[in-house]
Length: 475
Image (cartoon, rainbow, N blue to C red; front, side):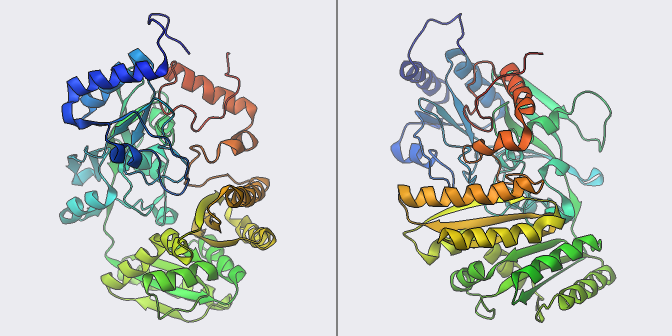
């Protein structure tokens, strides 16, 4: 879309004008350094990259507002950047764009222990927040792995290993401060646990991937640190038995804190990469139990019984905090463990999700697809909520990439046919665009495009992400 009040200039000239003005206003916080721009040209896993014209480091909501006002006036695209850990191309800028880095916005603005909530700037990571909360007896539980920022976690509707007990970002965000495309600042939600007033704008922006506005502050729901934490692993000769165990645990209503799966391919890689030498390269479930000691004992007893009935081998316990951390670090390092199998290979990470009753059928089908493809791939994921990941290893060239994407499409097609979604937590970005119409339908997508056109009429906020091109609902 064009802004009729502006004289026509080409995109390169417009962004050059904006960068010059930003340098006057923000000085050394504007960088055109090649290494800085390269670091902001892509996220993890999806190797689509495009250098931004400049990187601007914001330190406040007011900074973000001023930057967006200027970019909106000159019709220059802006892509928000946190830690760069997204895997579907969310932070890859289009040509002649500004990368807006929020990683310096790391303040804890308020903590309200009696109400179990806090307000933070968007560049803060969950790890740093939990260190600062430690003396309050509270913590923030959403754990996608890696050093993700809380603003980025909101933008991608992150979840992770603890979602089976604590939910996703959607359930743990009470309100947001957002800067709209034209620089206007709005606040959504608040500190109360529920409200029956107005549209739920907080939920609208959670998962919007920076296409509707840029999140600068987050009001978070906090939780009490459990009285006791226990972790265990159980290995299985058969992957189907492991999946059935996880499903039955959820169906029995066991309030387990985490239940994660790594198949034999992933376990072999993680044993080598993370030094898990006391384990065998078999499909493995990782468990964490939390609560009062008596409740934990009951959870453990039921879980052990279910695993035994599904041919699980003996439980192995992580009794100390250091040992629990070692096991979960190995789970979070799964991508890098797979990458280490062949450092010259490309690893493409994809995820999908189905109702838990279909999970075993889906994974069985995916294993057949992997075998038919001739590629090596590892399966791991948050099986407690029906979400799993496939790490596809292939040659780092155009042919290898095409083979991996073909397998990815088959995996997603299976999930969609079972009433699932093309992504349970990675989001859409650039990597999942082609599946959106199949999942949501043309009508729903046209309404989404109408929302985008209303809030960002010049299409400067992360253009080309989340929504495939198509008709806009007109009413």
